[in-house]
Image (cartoon, rainbow, N blue to C red):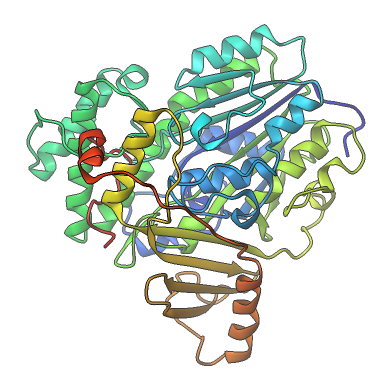
Length: 481
């Protein structure tokens, strides 16, 4: 526990960053399945990790942006915070986000995101937020400076590592945006596009930028369809390196130069990672190590420096740890969380923790129509589940169980992996370890919670009229049945 309240606490989420793609992580065994030009280089992240404590085996509670960030911000698993699917549920009114807790403690609160449709008011993320910013680093820096004499908590979420890799927007990336799209388009034989097609939209964009993004996604879709996974991962790593060297470094250097990190608490985490293989496209349809294992960095007063930890921890531990480091209120970091504060365990390896998480996916076109309807209505409407498949995992330091459920047929499949010996999760040991499978499966089922939904009463012609042109985050339309 810190001795006194910290005036500034900053939580940064780098969307889609897998743990072995930061160079301070020595374990590259899962990346070794790809033929890459080089291991990822992330000097900005490395420098910050060396100034505090870095965790290389932190595990996400979900593989979708909304559900996973809900777990980061509430310290709870989806069964408790209420968000399970890509875009259907809002945060439960019965839970508090870390923004609400800091606000109640007298802090000015700031939420900045590159994906305002996914982390915004429709889904309940802006409760107790004083300043809500969409893709504007300059405004974030200005507000941090403006409130430098005040207590402030800032949550900053960046989507630059997401597909299109390393390309945030034409505003952020300038001419490089179009140049990178043209380079990849020529390589893949995908011509310039002039008409908008159906797309996912996580924020409003100009038509020119949408066309460029759609062309880029066609290229990465084609790479995947041709089984060119090595090239996809190379693009992904190049995007990570570009983000670390430019947008991220610029932001960190500016807050350091302004003295905004002096005596401040900083946490850096991700919501999920990325895998391209015969079993996974990006992150939506799997819970493999490359998807759920994310990096975590902590630094500031009370954090021992130069600590590299490789024991299992979880993204649900981020919120209680930040409170433990920031607000001098006994018991605050241990109440109403599924996670724990990692602070007492940093000097030594943390206590043995069990990670778990989930992903729900299904009818892509229905989700697109539903998102369009919600966005045109300006609110989240009620609907039954649009998922036909649920995958869950339970992870200890050695074992990992994956449970896949067909939600329409009720059929289940289990797979068990000895992660210590099988980092690539290739050898299913469920038949050899039936008692362990039974125990771990029972734990998953016991902690699911209740999932409920309501019908969305809307006529077919209304859906067609309201369905805007979407496909933005890089998911393959039609890949999910």
